[in-house]
Each structure stands twice: as structure tokens, then as C-alpha cells.
Image (cartoon, rainbow, N blue to C red):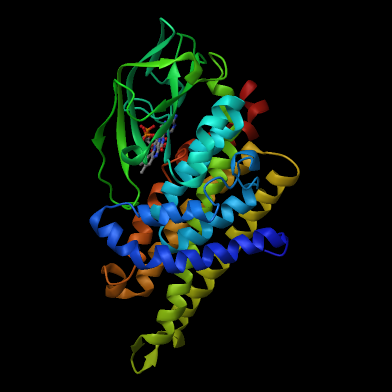
Length: 381
Ligand SMILES: Cc1cc2nc3c(=O)[nH]c(=O)nc-3n(C[C@H](O)[C@H](O)[C@H](O)COP(=O)(O)OP(=O)(O)OC[C@H]3O[C@@H](n4cnc5c(N)ncnc54)[C@H](O)[C@@H]3O)c2cc1C
């Protein structure tokens, strides 16, 4: 984009090269085997990408939504599953600790998370509470010198690999009595109770976390009791914007693959590129992807330079994933039987992208947020 800074352009180049070399060649293998590309994750740490939005005081890059979204787009083109794990670590865990934890907690956790020595995850969703996250029932009750945590967290990205969990719990009966803790792997009473198998994002490990009389000290609490809702709200926009970046990468990868195939595949003695219906598909999917790119990065720019806008973040979270799924389906159509086969990466991209319409708030939840905001006066009467 014309307004990217020199630093952002440099990140784009580094990430594009890294994705081609480290992510793309192994994407199919990790999708088939349902395994995590740990090696690439560690190398992201060496490149300084695991703390992209975090403070340089702890090894972070101190950059904004634009830089983080550039990483998501470039990685998303190559392997969306690895990118989702990168997002869960960097944005859902590391960025939340950077924004909300005390200096002592940051000193303790951030350097290892940012170097890649440790892996992080974030636990908000539960088996019975997804869209209605503030209804959560995983409880932290006061005990001698700390708290006892009891309950489960569902759908947690990186669960099986995580050394550190940024965990939301309930500490009272009122809706907003939610409190955050940092829980370490190996704490008695804490385990990964289930590995979850999925249709897409298969190179991103997902699991259920279980807490049974898991004792944590007060020093593990992030902020005061009842402050979780404020913490959640602080980072929601960034989470939504960056996940939309993965969909942008997927859409662009589909367009690139279609242009290539239209020049290679012959039917009726001609390249597919000669057929007007194919031309229409390529022109429309490329135009839509470019429109999405400009929308997303403009919202990123405004987030970094002017203001954080919940409605705009929800709009990009609604539109990018939804349209990228359609683009991936069109790309499959353009490839005919080969598009439907596993010889080409398009069916993986479509399966991967579908998650972005569900995770970090479903399409329907985004519609609710946008509509409630736009219609707030009308809804009062
Ligand atoms: C691969 C994967 C990774 C994930 N990673 C994480 C993670 O790292 N950490 C974490 O905490 N969570 C994670 N999640 C959870 C994710 O955020 C939730 O799946 C999501 O918020 C939806 O919740 P749910 O699955 O319980 O669906 P539900 O909330 O049960 O929704 C079911 C359906 O009902 C619709 N619906 C719900 N409420 C309304 C309403 N009021 N009006 C209209 N429609 C409604 C939804 O849009 C959806 O279509 C992950 C999920 C997946 C699948």
C-alpha cells in the first residue's frame, strides 16, 4: 500500500520471503498430518516477529496494527494454520500481556514469549459459552495466598504447545465479575484435556483446557478483580483486524493461483484465459481482493494513527473472511476437478478460511455489533 512506512515495507519483504521458504513448502504436509510447524514458529522468534506489537523494553518490535496485519497477509498466503497459531501467540497472548499486565509480570513472561522460547495461548471460550463469552463459568475463588481455578476452556489455539495461558475467569456473580490470570504449564490441576480435530486450520493445534482446583498465586492475577472486561475490550479491535489479514492473504493466494492456471490449462485448444467467463471470474475476484486490501489497511492506518474504531474493526472482520470464502470457492470452480482435488492448495485455503468466519467472533456477532451501534438511537424507542 502506498502509505506503508519503510519499516512496514521491509517487514512485508522479510515475511514474504520467510513464508515462501519456511511456510509454503510444508503447508500441505502439516495440513495432512494435522501437525504444527514448530520449527517455523521458532524462526519467527529469531526474526523478531513474535512480539510485533509489544514493547521494545521486553524484546518486542513496538509496531502497530498495520505491521501485524502485513505479517498475517504474507503468512496467510502460504499457510493459514501456522498464521492462526502465530496470531493466537502474538496478538491474543503476548499483546494482551503487554497491554494489561504489571511491569513485573511483563518482565517475567514477555522476553521468553517474544524470543520463541515459550509459546502462548489465550483462554476465553468455554464448552457452553462462545459468542456469549461474558457468560463464562470457569471460576476463580479466593483461597489462602491466591485463588483456586475450576472449569474448562474450549477451542484454545496452541493449547497443546502452550507454556503460558492468558486466562479469563469468573470471580463473582455479576456479569462483569471477570478476572484475568496468567497460568503456567505444569501448574498442578491444569491440563490439556482434549485435542480437537478440525476441517481446516489443521496445522494450528486446538485443544480444551481443564482446571481442577488449580492453585494460582495473587501475583498471577492481571490487574484487579473484575477488570477482564476492560482488558478484553482494549484488544478486540486488533484481534479482529489481524484475523481479517489472514483472509486477505488467502484471497490473494487464490487470485494468484487462478491467474497462473488460466494461462496453463487448455480446453477446446485454448488456454482458459481466452474464455470470457473465466476472464470475468479472474477480474471480479482480483477486484474484490484489491478492494478488501484497501479497506483493511485503511482501517489499520486509522487504528495506528487516529483512533480505534470498534465498528470498523467489526466490519473488516465481517467482510474479509466472508468474501475470502467466496473467492476461494470461485477459485476452486475455475480449476474444475483439479480445484476440488488435493493436488492444488485451493480446497485447503477454503477450509482454512471458513474458520475466520467463526473464530474471534462469528459473522453473526459482527453483524449484531455493527447493527446495535448504527441503530442505537432507533433501538431506544
Ligand atoms: C479453530 C478455532 C480456534 C479458536 N481459538 C480460540 C482461542 O484461541 N481462544 C478462545 O478463547 N476461543 C477460541 N475459539 C473459539 C471461538 O472464538 C468461538 O468458536 C466463537 O466465538 C463462536 O463460539 P461458539 O463456537 O461457542 O458458537 P456459538 O456461540 O454457540 O454460536 C453458534 C451459532 O449461533 C450464532 N449465534 C450465537 N449467538 C447469536 C445471537 N445472539 N444472534 C444470532 N446468532 C447467534 C453464531 O453466530 C453461530 O452461528 C476458536 C474456535 C475455533 C473453531
